[in-house]
Image (cartoon, rainbow, N blue to C red; front, top):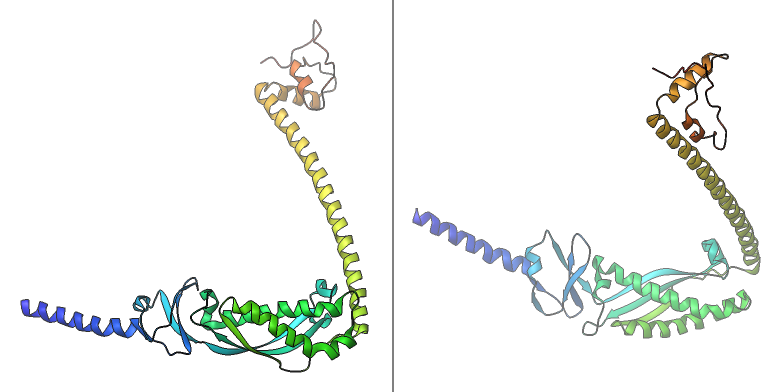
Length: 296
């Protein structure tokens, strides 16, 4: 029995000696950065950049995933910059479209925001594209205001991209990312004045329709509010009637006799003046000789 126990312990130790290094020891080359990501939330728990790294989360592979992201890469995208004020139309037809390709290098020692490494680095590429689009929008504004000038934009597009590269590189540097290049990946699409004027007319129609819809919505809300108040008054009266009937059940007898005969005289309870619709009325008192139909 002792021999079996000893063999079991030895086997467990051997399994652990194989299992732990296999899942927890991660090697990273100089042009990579290691990432530990929580499977459920997608949040980056930690990064590692050493030649050989002990990553204990690797042993819990059902909770964490570990992978390496190259420090150099490139991203291709189309920067769509709407021509003001046509951005409200949310259509690429009225936007300047510039196909671009950006190259970048992650500075491992100064890289500050590890969350950009989630999803195998896709988030980082989205961030780089977003920064470049924001800078381009500012650079193109000189061709949009005070008046849209597409001919000048066509001749100045390359200098604009060069200036955008310089400014975007400065913004990305603060996060530990070096923008190593920004080039056009195709011909830009620049809406002409005819398309721009068409967009202005379309925008005017949209705003007119929005104003009409807003006024109709306000009117509908007012109608619903009035209906709600009427319903509340009606329910209040029903509630008062139910309370009066509960406290004076003989009222039901009066209503019944009053409906089935036209000549019968009924001794009216004083509570009838409290009935909804009977406010302010003088109800006749019973005379001598009248029959009290409500008496049990």
